[in-house]
Length: 434
Ligand code: GDP
Ligand code: IMO
Ligand code: MG
View 1 (cartoon, helix red, strand yellow):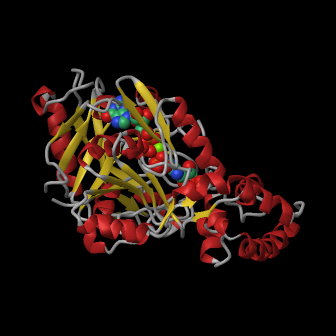
View 2 (cartoon, helix red, strand yellow):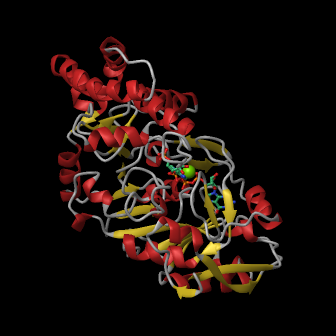
View 3 (cartoon, protein in one colour):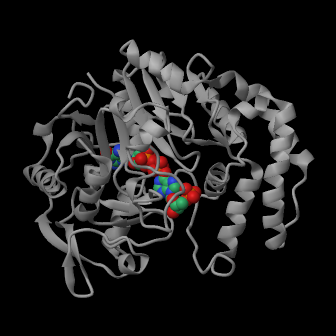
């Protein structure tokens, strides 16, 4: 018996929410450890769809504890809105089933504004770089955390020290805003913004590392829910077109306050093709009718921003890289059904860079933009795999595709998903028992 870390092995939206929801039946606690409400995780249970951004996907299952760890950046207003949205769908969130780390960083309105200002100014004041962020204030909030001037959850409980902290924060932000030609933000505005939510947020506050340590010792099963994907990782991703946190599995330890020895099985959620939202390199991107087909069949529209996701062939070289940077034990292969009916399927096995063959994506931005994908071609299948719940229900060519993916990435398929529905999932190896 072990704990399980779920992470995205591509550029996000691999289907982490669906798989975490499915696995959470076998877990006691579900922990988010990085990112914030830039994430959009969709679960479909008996035809009802739940969209979660900040709350761990385990929150929809009665009797499970959901935890927001210290590595997450929390927008308290977005948190309250999400709790209200879920309540309207019949899901009750109380301190009985949700805990938030007292040392988690808060996202304030000024972070959200700054994120938007920078995106709008991109090409002018941002060195010509537009990231295509979710405009949720994620990057600016992490900047303040690393800059040691962030407001954290626990600060809401101590108004006297909060006031001094807000002063310090505004000294930095107002200087920045003046430089950008923006109006300054008043101390009163931020104090009001924070005090208006403190009564709702504080009851969820907990010393999460301590609680998790106790639970681990009594044998609780912990499921860690990653957000974004490994190619959006601040270190290992396609920098600067990345998010502002470490998204790789190692972050589950630092972002929750547990030692790395407690992590256990690393399950890489992997889409059977590739998508990306926002700007940045994408070697296997398809701008033709096949890309269009994948986008329509796979309903590839962002949950958070509604933006169209870019689509392309499966990139085995990228996922092989993620297997290494995360220490992936096995993968959950999702959205295989989206490939139904295509005559042939391509898989990227490596690249050429300026005429030379390479087997991984180089770290340099310029080189990432220049790599050309090298493909192998497989025969497609005509049969439908939608809703398949047994390996034996898969057409022979689909099994061949899966086997080829396993071989190229160097990791086995532990779970296979064939529709958005919770139970349309094939279990090969139980990550909690492996
Ligand atoms: P996440 O961010 O990794 O949790 O993924 P998203 O929820 O943003 O995007 C995945 C989308 O694909 C969601 O709309 C899911 O309901 C859907 N989905 C998940 N697994 C499957 C699958 O196996 N087949 C199909 N067709 N859709 C899936
Ligand atoms: P889930 O958890 C896909 C992308 C944004 C942008 C970049 C930086 O649903 O897989 P940010 O707002 O984080 O500063 O934006 O990262 N991005 C995601 N793409 N899925 C996500 O989350 C993402 N979260 C951020 O589109 O390119
Ligand atoms: Mg998503």
